[in-house]
Image 1 (cartoon, rainbow, N blue to C red):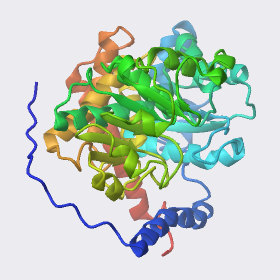
Image 2 (cartoon, rainbow, N blue to C red):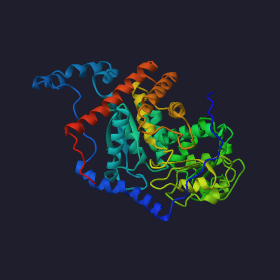
Image 3 (cartoon, helix red, strand yellow):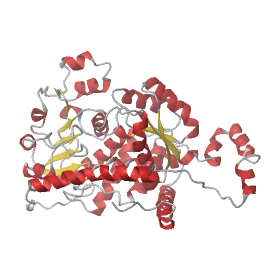
Length: 466
C-alpha cells in the first residue's frame, strides 16, 4: 500500500471573501450562460459528421456505396460480429434522453434537452475519441425507452443514458444492463458515483481513515447519490455506518411516506433498510453529527449546508458539496467550520468532482474490448485509476483528483476498464494493457488534434469576441 505523508503543520486559511467578492463569484458563475446564448446560434450546434474514409475521386463511391458495399453486407450477414470490422459501430455510441431531468431545469422535454446531449457528444469525442449521436426521445414511458434502446443497439457499440427522472431511471438502467448486448450506462448515476468514489479514495488517503470504518452522510438522495451509495458500498463502505437524507429528512424504515411508496421508490426503500443502524431520525443537522464524510448532491446553495452543522462532524471531516451552479456551501465557510477536505462540482474552486473525468475514458475502455456491459467493478477500477493518477501527481487537501487538462487520465482509465472487463469475462476481445493504452492514446490524441487543426484552418471558425 502506498503511504501518503501529509503535513500536520497548520496553514493559514485565506480570509473569507467580502460581499463584493461573493457577488463577483456569482456573476462569474452566470457568464457561461450568457456566452452560451451567443455562441450556440453562432455555431448552430456543437457536433457534425465528417467522413473517415478516403474519397480520391468519384469512383471510390463504388467501394463505399453500391455496388461494392454489398460484399461487407453479405459478410456481416454470415457473421454478425464482423459488423465491428466493416463499420464504425465499435467506436459509436448514442446519448439517449427523454428530457425529464435536465441539469437543474427539470422536465423541459426532448427538444430543450438536445443542447445538453450535443454537449455530451462533444466531450465524448474530444476527451475520449468516441463518436457520439445525441438522441432525444419523444416519450416518457420507461418501457418505451427501454424498447427504443434495444431497437437502436444494432447500430451502436454502447448507449449513454442521460437526464432521466427517477425512479424510472433505475429500472431503465438495470433492465438494459441485463437485456442489452452492448454496454448501457447512466452517467447521472454511474459517472457521478465513479468520480465521487475516486475523490473519496484520495480524501481518505490524506486523512488516514479506512473506508470500511468511516461514517458517510448522503445529502439529497436522488439518482446520483443513490448510485454513489451503491458504488461506495461495493468499494468497502459499510451501509450500516451511513445515513441518507432526502428533502423530508433521514431515511429509515418507519417513515410513513417511504412505506407508502416503497414499490415505486424501491432503491430508496432498500437504502432505508440497510443504512442508519442507529435508527436516527430528524434532518441533515442530526445526520451530520459525528460523520466523517458528507456527500451532498441536493439543492444549489449557498446555505443548504450550514457551518454550524458541519462543525459537528468528526475530526478531519470531508465534504463534497456538488450542487451546480452554486455548491451547497462555500469553500471558505467549510474551512472555517473545520472541514479538512472540501470539493465541489465547479472548476473555479479546488477539487472539482466532475463526471467528465470519468465517462470518456470508461467508454473508451469498454468499446476497445467490446464489453457487453459496464459493471460496478469496472467503475471501481476506473475510480482507482483516477485516484492513483492524482496520487502520483502529489496529493494535498486542494488536489485530490486530476483535472480534464490532465488528458493522460483518460487512456489510463480505459486500460483499467478494459482489463477489468477481460478479467470478468465481459469482453469480446482479449487485448494487453500496453495495446489498450496505445490505442486509447492514439485515438484521443487524433480527436484533439483534428479539432485544433480544423480551428487553425478555419473549418471551425473562432467565435467573435465576447
